[in-house]
Image (tube, rainbow, N blue to C red; front, side, top):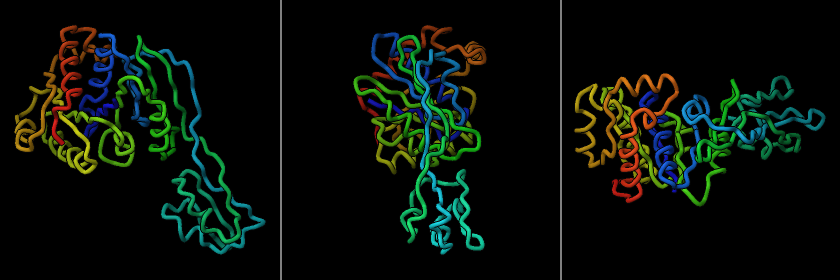
Length: 283
């Protein structure tokens, strides 16, 4: 089973819930894997403190032009929607950092003057953390191909246990790439106007993808009840509420999980897992 922990905005506590859920499930003897797909702002390793066992370069295909074959027709530049390849005064220029690796320029070139080469966009690291299989991807500074790195990390998902995917914030392409193929999505939010607005966007996204989902409300006692009322109106199950707690906040600032400072939370996260497994949430 694959569970995606997502959110319409950053800072709601996705990683907090993802790492504590993974730790709790592992504590009770179940096989679990944590994959941090937030390749631009990864931080799950701060809390799980894994021992990295392997590091793999992640590459994407980008065009390389054989200037001797190229006639400067400009068809490649006319096709590219990202200005990653263009023809200036009969000479083709390639801007690899803008390329989305669609292969269109190679397909349209009448002279077969464009071939594919590999460009490194980041690394994927894998290891262990107290019985948890761990993995994350690190996007290179300046690289924009986050979905490709996420796909690479997700290929390492185990087949014989639970995989928890820590998803990037928002509802953009990297988020879609991270959650698609999941068996369940837990949307983490907070009881604020921004939290509600972005929750509505995230709910629209998972409904469009026809994925079963539920909501977790972090810092549930700091705002109003607008989020709770919205979930009730939309028939969305709230499976977890975490109140604002200074002890949890202090532990977080030191990279310590809440289940380690407040063991009673293990029962809450175990109950969350049982609710998800029973698939009671509505689409």
